[in-house]
Image 1 (cartoon, helix red, strand yellow):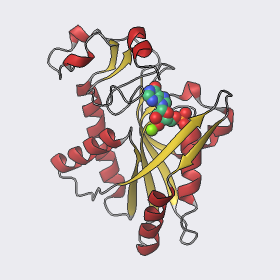
Image 2 (image 1 turned 135 degrees about the horizontal axis):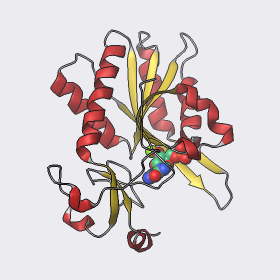
Image 3 (image 1 turned 180 degrees about the horizontal axis):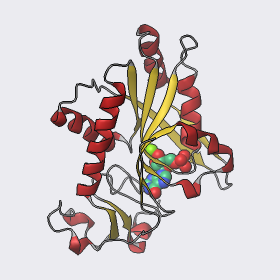
Image 4 (image 1 turned 120 degrees about the vertical axis):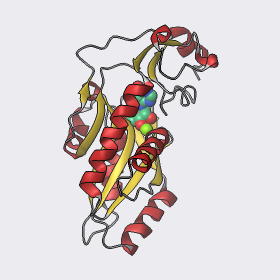
Length: 230
Ligand code: IMP
Ligand code: MG
């Protein structure tokens, strides 16, 4: 596994006012962000390291990338952009996959994977037998329920030659992992940052659809949480 930056030891938030020299916070988010956990420049540098690692690991191998909608689109786009800029010779044409979790009022939730997107991935891996590996591009692994289901469904798409499926996640929140989802930990091959048990937004991550387009990863204010509650 690529060594992750572990932010759990020092989970201090940077005030928005200290973002000098980095992208500025969009006007419409001012007052809605408690603080910044990971500024854009730091995310971007880490994405480049991951892009380099992916290129080194898969340049000559049959690999298919799949990004999880909608949260991981930004991460995936910036991986593509880094590969492009660094000219690392890795073909990166990720297919989308939507996995939605429906959490009831009990602790057990249910994850539903989009069947038609899964069928497109199946067509792809059945057509191209050189593909031996699927790398899932994810924004955050939290309880692990989503990845448990996706790993199972994608892993079953081809019986022979079998597919190996691994995870490349920007953020990992291991303190929240459910006991019955621990087995996915062995499949997490790339981690951008390991973070403490806090709800974060930005760089693709949303709170009820808001904050996805924020460049930095931060924590919403209590007022914003209340204002945009469903
Ligand atoms: P899991 O199934 O509990 O691992 O959760 C995975 C999904 O929950 C992620 O793909 C996100 O969409 C969402 N999620 C988990 N933690 C956060 C967070 O801190 N901020 C925003 N979304 C989150
Ligand atoms: Mg997600």
